[in-house]
Amino acid sequence: MEAEKPLPFRQLFLICAVRFAEPISFSIHIPFIYFMVRDFHIGKETEIGYYVSLITSSFAVSQLASALPIGMLSDRIGRRPVVLLGLAVGIISILSFGLSKTYQWALCTKVLSGLLDNNIAVLKSMVSELSMGYSETQRARAFSMLQVVFGLGGIVGASLGGYLSEPVRKYPNVFGRGGPITDFLTEFPYFLPCFAASCIATIGWIAGFLFLEETLIRKKQMQVAQNQEQEGLLTNGENESEDYQTFGGQSNGNQFNKPQSSATIRDVLTPAVVGVCITYGLAAYQNVFYDELFPTWSATDRGVGGLGLNSNEIGTALSFAGMVTLFVQFFIYHRLTGWLGTIRLFRASLLLSIFVFGLQGCVRYLQNGDDDIKWLFWVGLLLSIGLKTLCQTVAMTGSIILINNAAPRVDALGTINAFSQCCSSAMRALGPASSGFIYSSTIAAVGLPFTVRAHLSWVILSCVAIMTYTASMQLNTAKYISKPKE
Image 1: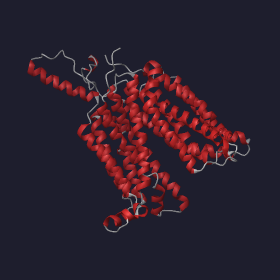
Image 2: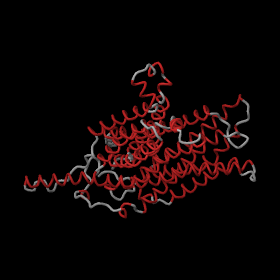
Image 3: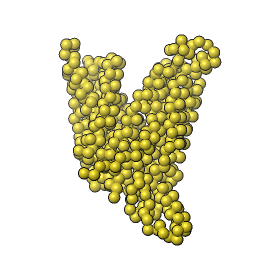
Image 4: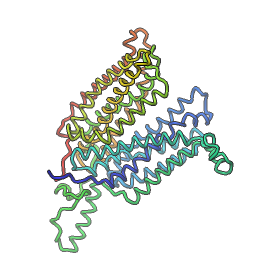
């Protein structure tokens, strides 16, 4: 059996380095945003939550508005300049956020970051172009790297925001000795974590500027065609019959010998693309619904229908989910893909999710107040979280691969990934509000039996999972198979 050609790991590593900066910038404010808004003194303490949610949601809404234009721009001028511009704007915006003295300034910096530092769709396109024509297992490994970096970036960002905010108060022996640095960090107590995030992003930008190569196939085709024309004039047509080499160094055939005309939205958003993007949006919705419901349900008293856990116990459960995510991405996903194939594995994860969500509420029955068998409750809880995380990780990574496999034209991947990002962002904006409303309404519905109220939110989520699985079964398998290089 012929050995597989290795993926271009050097370029994949550079893409991951650039990707690492975005989740850090997004999550850096989470530990201190409540205190930052409180220090702005713009309203009553009971209103702080509203202003905090407005800052957080403004970033997501801005990304929703800019994703498609940025993706289309990357299809025209190339991936590399768009990525570098977005990362540069991200560096400026995160530094500006750390220098915020008013709520309006902080809000504007988040809007600016969401509008222009919106590289995820473009980076997905680059990974797709780099792994195009490789086996399903190799393609799965390439996209898993992108997902792993996103998870690590979120962890690093939240840690930096928690440990480096208000350094004068937290570390007086280091930053409280007086002088200009102490005065500056006293006036801007949330600048240090933002500065650390900007340094990480700057390293990524420098690495990208020096070593990141363009992957847009149509742009490379035009360059090759121009070079061939010049060489033809010099050699009297000696090289006219030679096929040029693609980015990966393999011949793609005659269909790519001439640059194609620019793709229109109608050309790009085929039924296959729209179908898988809708499924991707539903998968994103059920995942964010769970992510919002689980902490609230866990903290709710058992007498009301929850688990009655404290913040440390909830943090332990969520940390376990994070570790499972990394383990699946590093060691499991590409092996499962090689065994089942991308679309079959994708559907299997959605099918399993129906039962995981529906049975999640039953974990509370493992609690009986006896500390001697409390381990049984934790085994059940962590097992359910582990299965849910496995399904979520497989479904989201698989969605991304299928979206890129469905592309009718390789020079329109930016537009396609941007459209899928819009679907995901819209559902992620809807998920938290609907999850909170449904849980609050069901718990407060005293006219229903207690057993029904305790489980109804999970049953509704399971129904959403049924819809998602049904949508996945409508996809034409033949449209989502990656073609190997000839």
